[in-house]
Image 1 (cartoon, rainbow, N blue to C red):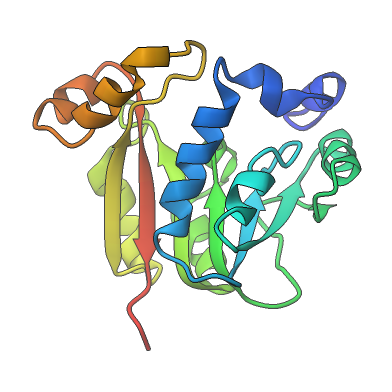
Image 2: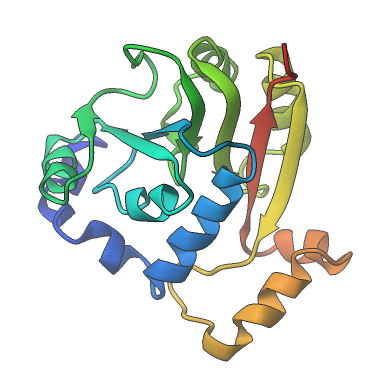
Length: 202
């Protein structure tokens, strides 16, 4: 079974089932994406799944488009009213440039990370935003590849929202910890960064 095919039977309700607190998880992602953008900008979400991020991105006045390799995921997104189409993140090119490209829980699908960043840079005018497990990919290596691809300003923010546990009243504490010196120590064992690569204004 291919990487795309294994998700076919799980497409319906994917985002809702993937996270213990899907609204918080997706809302926080969208907030970090929106920081670099202006209302009316287009966000291209690679490996979008069922397009669960769409509603949260659009709350910031942004336009959302999704791309996924799995046709069942694309169909689920479209049924939810999401502008989505089928495509492989390694070679997909939108019909026109987009302000931002996002990629969540899918960096490992890039065949060659440096080549992927360069490919995305060719059609992205402002920002590439993605999550990064620093225990899987050294942050310094990723920053180097982003800068080589033209994303000259890189911001890596700790993201302490667990996927499988709802923090409830502890959520404000977790968010506060993201900005403390303890964050790097925590990231050695748990959680991810949300990395934003920005292009310098032309």
